[in-house]
Length: 236
Ligand SMILES: CC(=O)[C@@H](O)[C@H](O)COP(=O)(O)O
Ligand SMILES: NCC(=O)COP(=O)(O)O
Image (cartoon, rainbow, N blue to C red):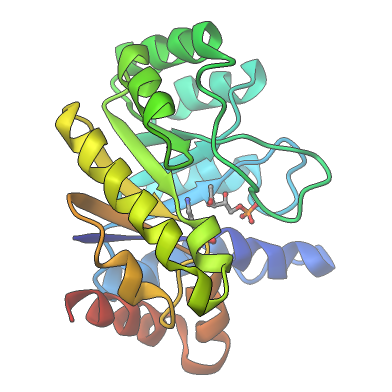
């Protein structure tokens, strides 16, 4: 199983004071040195952390394959078509949210998502849909033509340890179902060293995208160590 590191919150530190440091690009280089397989960066409409320039520089420098997380909005789709990252992950966005709260409403926005999947795919970009663990939604993902889904693990990760069983069972069922549809299955959101054990019970996972907890550990241990620690724990 591969590890993708989400470097959004390196940029959160930078945006807190409007300085030029810490630079997400330096973080990406350190993640590459630590053995990560990819970089995820979420270009939100409100630009609260990752900026357009970060995306262009990450693509130009290419320390690792770039997974551009983004809402399905025209202005951001245009940037994606311009940058041509290795992967795009379509995520929902709400202005007032603290972080991504739920999965993409693929059924409710099917035609718009299918159109964007087609245009990004034609540009040579691998498209992933960030969705809740729900079989009807996963079937709709398949019908959009997207080859990848990323299961939203937030409900499991944010639950009290004693309440997690129902969520992990749902994730296991969904991963099995998505794999059966021929979809590549990733997972992410809220994963940390404490809750990783349950995530490792999910079958068919190609990649975990982990950011906030790694960046938090990096504050005390350094980013290379935090990435290496997480990747090591994923092998257990
Ligand atoms: C989609 C996902 O679960 C995370 O990458 C999320 O995008 C983090 O978003 P913020 O960086 O805005 O907290
Ligand atoms: N898509 C999940 C991701 O990129 C990282 O989410 P988090 O670990 O920052 O919650």
